Every structure is written in C-alpha cells, then in structure tokens.
Length: 279
Image (cartoon, rainbow, N blue to C red; front, side, top):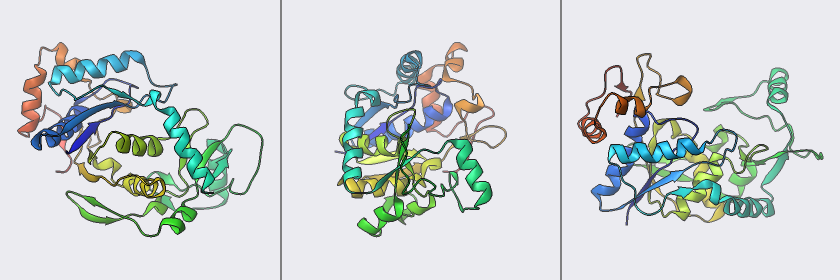
C-alpha cells in the first residue's frame, strides 16, 4: 500500500503553503487508495508549543484533509533516535562537536570553505578532538560514503538522482539543545511509518542525499520522492512562519470555508498575492 505523510513542526501557525503541502501528500495517497499520516515534529522543546499542536489538528480538520490512524509525535520516539545514533557510533561514523555558532563563524573567517545548500560547510574543527563539555554528534560523511559507496534515489518529477551528501559536509545528527536532528528523526520516522512516498517541497530536495545515506547505513527501506513546487509571496519568497506569512486561522476568521479553499488549490486557483514558484 502506498503511504505518505504531512509532518509540520508546532513552532507556529500553519499557512497556505502548509495547506498546499498537506494537500499534495493527502491527494497522492488517496489517488492510490493509500494511507495518509499526520506526524508532529515536536522534539525541539525550545520552540514547540502545545497550542500549536492543537491548532495544526484544527486546521487540518477545517481543510478536510483527514489523516489515517493516530497522530505520530516525534517527542514520543526519542528512544528510537537514540538507538540509531548508538548504532552509527558503534560503526565509528560519528564524532563529537563542541563548536558554538560564533566559533564556527570565526573558523570560517580564517579558513575559507565551500558552500552548500545550507551555507558554509562545517570545516571539521572538532574531528579527532576530545573535550569534557556539552556537545553535538556529527556524521563523518567521508567515512560514511566510503562504507556504502555511491547512492541514488528517484524523484517522480526529476527522475533518477545521484546522491551528493558531501554538499552538506558532516551534518549534525544529535544536537546540544535538543534530541535528534531533522535528518535523523525524519528518516527514521518515514521508515517506521511505512512511508512509501515522501511528498514534500522542493526546498528539501537536496536534503534527500543525506537521508538516503542514513537509510543505507541503518538498513532502512528507500522510499520514492516527489518534491513539489512551493507557494510564494508577493516578493517571490516562499511562505514561512519566520516571514509571518498569513496563517490559515486568518482565512477561517474571514469566514472562508476550508474545504472550498482546498478545492481551489486543487484547481490551481491561488489566493490573491500568492503564486506557484514551480510545478
């Protein structure tokens, strides 16, 4: 059975871009008689809020995008992430990193490095260093690639892709201030949830290379991917909570019917001031 998921973080209210992402995942699953899962990515204790969790569920009901089964909460799966981290550590693929953001910025000034999709690639300052203080855990990407060899993945629009995780360098898998990083948690959750098709925005396209490496290292199944286009604001920027994009609650307060809004999105009719960046 085909299965998809919508996985928002409860660090703010959902906006129309979230509605579009949820619609893409929902309708893909429904078109095959498949399973649509709602997953709340709530392991960032400094930003996740219970009221936002309630608001996400309220918004999804208002839109008429009903999920199957129980809502999955990442905060209830931390032990699974820790077990996977231990496995990678036993494989000799992790190292501790004590660097603060200011220390990394200082190192980058004295040692120019290549830039990836997330900005400057971490220069490996802490590789081989030992210290007794709070730290995160980074994946030694070169060692990981040496272990598994070339990796590919398939996107329904872009076709066969050759993973290039070195673009991101030694990514953080376990943070100082929170449990597992997005890369580790999302990869494990997709496997545990039986997600056959990962439907998400094109802004996450490059991350798939990292997720495929983790799947290979941990013996997890490889899903098929579809990275759909993003909805943009009047400045051509993607909608985002950090940019204070208008929340779905504001549409509801204006008396707009959620189910009709979803039908308009299905027809490609976008609200005033919103555009589709790419198909």
